[in-house]
Amino acid sequence: MAETDKPLLIKRYASRRLYNTETSDYVTLEDIAGFIRAGREVQIIDLKSGDDLTRQYLLQIVAEHESKGENVLPINVLTDLVRSYTTEMQSVVPQFLSASFEMLREGQSKMLENLSTIPNPMAAMPGFEAMRQQQEVFMKAFMGGLPGWSASGPAREDGTDEATPGKEDDIAQIKRQLAELQKKLSKL
Image (cartoon, rainbow, N blue to C red; front, side, top):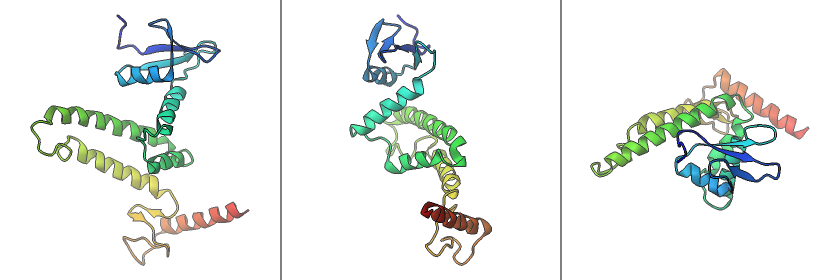
């Protein structure tokens, strides 16, 4: 039996066929998704160049599931991910997502252990409040860098912050000016 603590090595041939090195047979993207669902780590390598193609294929698996209507990622999350590629928040997003999913996995494990003894398992899920706070801090930091949004929430149409009506700090003014410049540039 194969060692399950090592990643399953999949080789991609020039014909783009994927070859499972443990079972010596060809596999599909759905087979790879099945390995991952079963808890197995997978590494996909281009046979000729030796390049690691794992990220590319995992993204392709996610895209195929999303396009088939198996929606896991809400539109606003996808939109924020696209935005993160064009902002300085690009470096923060991977760590945030990784930490959030790790907390979710830990919470799910603990929740399943306590499911029968807790009347409302979601409210008592270990780490739930910490995850909520972490996501709130991230969204404030992420959205704070976008025009029309402040750390306390969306800006009003008159450009003032909803939390402090009538008071504009320098950052809010700079954001508004940047938004105006962006509008002018897009017209050019």
